[in-house]
Structures are given as structure tokens and as C-alpha cells.
Image 1 (cartoon, chains in turn yellow, cyan):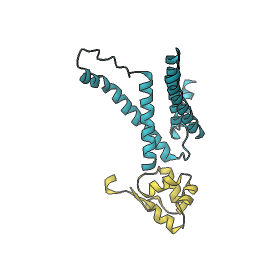
Image 2: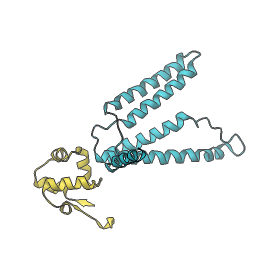
Image 3: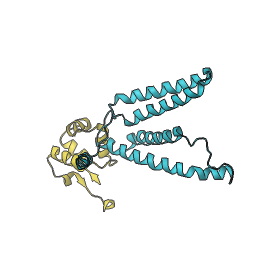
Image 4: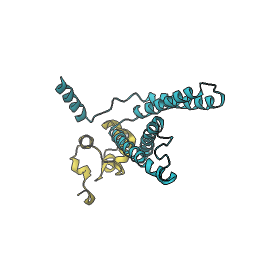
Length: 67
Length: 148
């Protein structure tokens, strides 16, 4: 699964630390999500989408390898 | 009564089945206990008297208690990624620890040959089994905490 969290974060002029504080996880977790090392839970994905005021699918997208 | 306990447990599991972990300061306490116990073992090895064996067993047990405290202490940044990693580390430690314990008699057979006190290996002890499980857990958890 790929994501555009870093793009959304840049649009909203947020640092990884700001985002991590807003969604209640550590900065390392945000970094892991952005580098596709960790797939967040549905709850965390929804929190991120709500924060950026977009649909989840605009941030997280399935890859061919996921299907 | 029984049903309500089961129901409560199901609710607990639905929320992610979080272990009742100790505060993160217990990690340092666990490290301190283990280090002091190791130093104590070195001390009793060189300066111990008739009670050397008793103290050795007691201190080995203390090392295990220290390691266990490190294992069940909350991480400084305990979030869903760490929780996920924690469960994977528990699974890894269980599978690897059990596999090695089950394979050891056969390794012993190959090393010592057949019909020679095959199953009497010294290290099949409480300390060996417990420390290997705790060590595999810590190895996995601490390695992948920074990698994943």
C-alpha cells in the first residue's frame, strides 16, 4: 500500500512531529508510514484523513502487490 | 459469572487486547536488577563460600526477573506500531524458542552419537529455557523497533 501522507503534510505545512502529535502516535511511526515500512490501522488512517479533510483513498492507495 | 468474565475478556480483546504493561521506568529498574544480579554472580564466583550454589541459583533467577521487567515495561512511545511489534516479537520468541528446544535433543544426538546419555543435556534447565524466550523477544523487539 502506498500513501501520500508526506504530500498532504507539505500542503498543510506540518512537520512529522506536528502530525504525530495531532494523531497521537510517535514521530517514528509517522516516519515509518511515510516510508511505507508500516501500514497503519484503519482507525489511524481515518484519523489522518480527517485531519487533512480528505477521503482515506486520496491518501492511501492499494498497490498491485496487495491484490 | 463465567460468561460475564468471558464477555469482559472479549471486550478487552476487541480493543486490541492491550497487555497490562508496567510504566516505562520499569525498563531501567529491570536493567538495574539484571546488571546487579550479574555483578553479584561474578562476586560470588570469586569470593563465594559454601553457599555459592544457593546464591548462584538465586541470582540467576533475579536476572530472569530483571529481563521480564524489561519485557513487560511500556515503551517510551507506546503506540499502535509498537504494540503491533510487541505481539510479533512475542510470536517470534515463542516459535523460535520452542523450535530450538524441540531440535536440541536431535542436535545432541548428532554431536554425542547414539546411545550415549542422549537426553541429559545440562542446559535443559529452567534458566536456559526462560532466558532464551526473553532474549529472543528482546532481540526481535529492539532490532525492529528502529527498522520497521
